[in-house]
Length: 245
Length: 245
DNA sequence: GGAAGCTAATTGTCTGACAATTTAATTGCA
DNA sequence: TGCAATTAAATTGTCAGACAATTAGCTTCC
Image (cartoon, protein in one colour):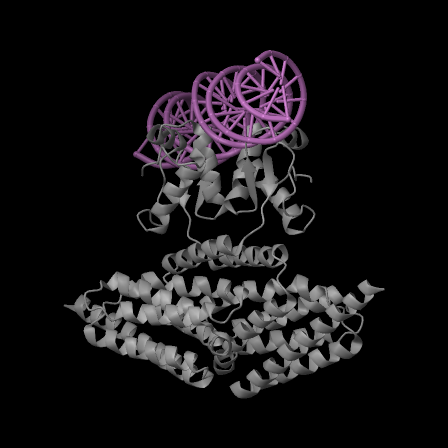
């Protein structure tokens, strides 16, 4: 583990990169203990605060965890699926909100990915997933539900569909795509009529999954994608015409 | 921006979370300047090193960038697609390597997602994407190529396919799925025969994309998925039989 | 008017210290 | 001997103050 004296970056960034590389490359395995802060400072010829800044960078990426006390220190952290979901959702959400990604593009990506899950979900779905989907449809049918809660339930429905594929890696990749859409969906105000159209399509999807009919599920998802895109376009058009006034 | 005195977490983690929430929620917009480290220390009633640790955590997530000098400081960073790709690939790779994800599960996720891109790619691919795919096929046809380089070229080929869909959000989500497979693919030693089978399928895929034939591309991808899964199973079986000796 | 230098603000780094926490060893006692 | 309480040691968490490095803007001088 060496540093590049000519690098333009901070020492703490260089040290974090050096240690991070060891972890990613597998030279430091899960639960291995890093040298103490004092030893790292000695090794890299820097002060302890600089080492600490480097360790905090790694901790922010969930690459290490720290423990106080006599046998404490920094340990290589096993990246759990839960942690990865969280990072994935945060990054995806920020990416969409900060880059003026159009509703169309985000929507297309989301439904393209989701349709990839449908056949697997139809083949493998368990009762738990069917229950989650039916529960969310019931929630969505309450006319008193706020728009935000409707969108949250929409996300929960689609995550049940994704999880039904029974592939945690797939669920991880889809988590960001589905969750990051929520702020965009919130921007669309749902009329009673569009809500019922969405609920109908959700019911068709759930029914097809229950019947293990992949083709029907795909068709319904495809229709939902088209319908959602249309809603988005209507809202955008309405906004533009209001802006002209 | 307040801290919870009862929290079990580090002060730097709490401060990072507080500022991070402001950014994610949009209260701090892109390119906004955060207060100076001294002001933040004053605001949160902590020392400057503690504030700095918090800022380094945020920097590690690409949420902020810092600049030295008179008009310097910490600024909310626009998360670029490039940065997001990088984080996505790192996280996906670690997730697979640290959680003993089986080759089957990772492979299934990857090809399911990739097949979602095929129809879009067939419809929209430009000459640049076709060129990239053809170039990689040529690279792969060199018998002197090392297994590592063959896998790297394989990844490049598939990324061209993904990028051909012309949807950056889709490319972002797929980047992790495709790149994170490389270490797993490296574990499979390719015989000359399996290489030629893969190259044939790549050629069929590239041809179908060039002809804008989505169905043919999907069929070839599907075959490639099956073939890759088979290769993985053979390698695992051979290992187990060796282990029994 | 322009170039050089000065000043102020800010982050980057260092030193040293103490507090809090946890484990292990030691001691004292029954 | 066995066990409980105490002590010691190691480690991270936090603080205070200082100086170096960098950068923008202002001032001064030619």
